[in-house]
Image (cartoon, rainbow, N blue to C red; front, side, top):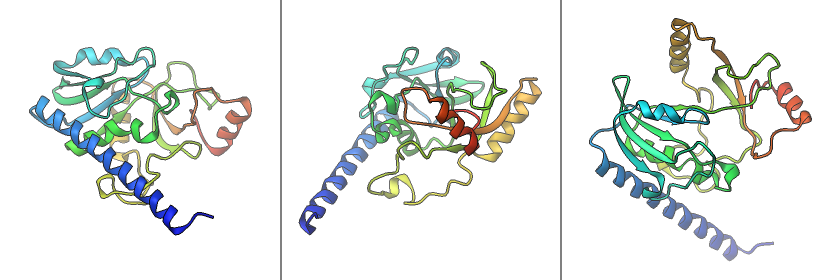
Length: 227
């Protein structure tokens, strides 16, 4: 059984690790404040197959991930590993052209570091995109799905560990993780453009292996539509 002293040493180590993590975030924020003259309206994270959208960003300021303190490198094909700032559809945006994943060997704190950097910078909105596998039997390759809710029971939480006010409350509410106003706007835009758009539940697992047939059946019974 661990002694009181051993427990305190462990807590001190975790706190020191948290402080070092916060310093990485602050350092990245300072680099970005020097590189760009205004705060983006939104951060758009481009998932698999969508990297070419970054070419539509006008007057871009391009920052490779390896120039930003604390940012990791992506090893996934098609993920360029660049952060862009510029104009898109009359909005000043930040675009992550590729991201790094838990299954590449990074901890969840590293995976979400860019999001925390952008939040600290003052970016008020986040749009996430990715390619996923279908659980619902009537899904077809190329279908578009709007996430209305998610199941994350099988993945490590990025909130695990010491809590800090920089990252929000200890026990954040999960009732409206995906903003209902934004989801309604996305549905309206899709309908206006005659693009079929499903609004369903997304589940994620640790990977990198795909799910077994039994795991797919389990996710289906839990209410997941894609994984």
